[in-house]
Structures are given as C-alpha cells and as structure tokens.
Length: 86
Image (cartoon, rainbow, N blue to C red; front, side, top):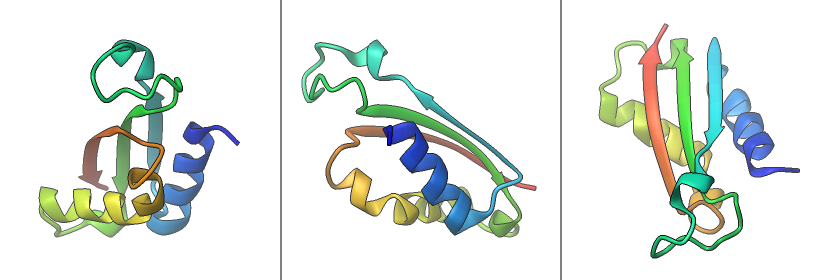
C-alpha cells in the first residue's frame, strides 16, 4: 500500500472527513537534507471534518498528527496540514 493510501485510510477512519486530499510532494524535496529519497516522505493534507468544529487550528493539527503518529515517527519526513471544520 502506498503512503498516500495509508494516510487516506487512517485519516478517514479517525476523523471521518467530508473532504480529504492527500498530495505527495516528495518530488519537490528530492536531494534536500533529511529527505530519505524514497519518493514517499513529504506530504500535504487538505482535510475538512465536522470533528474539527469549535477546535483551534492547533487542535486540528494535533488530531491529524495523532492519527498518523506511527507514520510520522518513521516514513514521513514532513507533513503540511490544511485543516478546517465543516
């Protein structure tokens, strides 16, 4: 399973988003320090969820990071998050 599929599956299960876009931006960072060269290390997540209602931006980001904690401690080097409540 690709990292995009893994991220999508985990965020759908944890946050039940109304909209979700997972973008692999690894090619933009090829050769940069810290980039493992796997082609699956840098991602952008655009997510809208009712679970975010009344939460601060920090709390929304923490919820995404919690759902992806295993990946963030290993295969994902960088994750940009654009989160909003529906």
